[in-house]
Image 1 (spheres, rainbow, N blue to C red):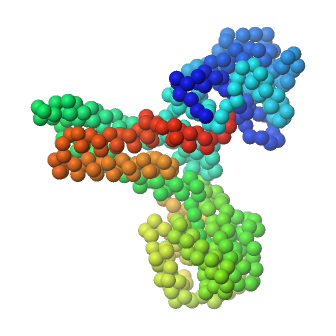
Image 2 (image 1 turned 60 degrees about the vertical axis):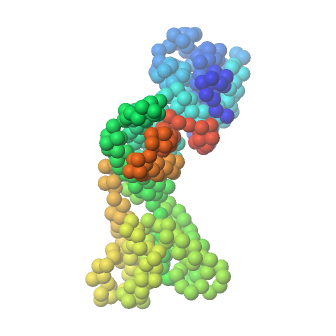
Length: 469
């Protein structure tokens, strides 16, 4: 599917439609490879009268027509990018045409007829990686940037695409490579019992790597929820207004609302962006003794969602619930919500049915408490404010954030190898045994940025891209 520089497929000039299907004004077709200009010369007629694309300056746009065997297919704008100053690092052309599906397919067929090959998923970005325009973590960030659906996930992906923590990883790996070289050199002089690598300096470097890597690992929990949406579980007894609240937050009738207890028997999920953050709301089955087996399964799923949630909204009917009941519920579900990173907010619903808030609730300060009417959508905006306060966005601004599970797994293996190296020093292990763990640490650091790769890793990463990117 993919190529390396010794593979004949690297010499192919590839083409693909880069914009999604559907109605629109403009579509873009991309062409990349050493034959790009030669192929375009065969099919493009410039309105300026210039006939040779090779004479055009890089990063210029030209108006003309795409023709197939003398037939005009469309009037287009041609964007020229000359190697190495293109996304892929190769000669590349982008054709902006009208978004008719017929026109797009006809232009694509014309390019293929004249020597281009259809691009596979992610092949443009793969070529950018192979040609040194992006490292592997930056290439992965391209996919994350395309998929970003909030200001925060966009920022995390953009930072990583611009280098992010890959620069940190590369520098730490470079320093460790220097020491590894000295350790390897000692193996050549093992009979003379000499040390070229200063052990104290190596330990200092290991501590430095360990500290940086653990900071990145610690950021993954935040980065992962920012990327996929912060999970917010809406829990409470039946008929307290959980589904009505979900509908009010989403501003649509997502969940069925009924006076019949146990209407919601399974979890219902949807996402919404609030001030740049994506929250994934989960409406759950009411917490009570199940009336039947199906409801029982729903309640068990509710408990699982409470465990998985970063924020829990406990909804209660302000008119009939006592403080003692709330304290009992919190106590019963303590093992599910007791997490220093998990936030619980109490939502007193149905204030529209009251003259005033019952005595005692306003002094209930153990947890954040809001009083709303989900039915009338009163004070719903306060929930959004509390949700945003519950997420420490300073962490996003002040540090590199890991949001990729592959990077997290590689970093975790690095820390394991660092601990083994340190333990080896303490035990006085010989250089040949130390070098094994040092090589492993180097491997996993290099795996993140692509300095060490396998066909399986590359296929898995780029196979998830869309065609045309």
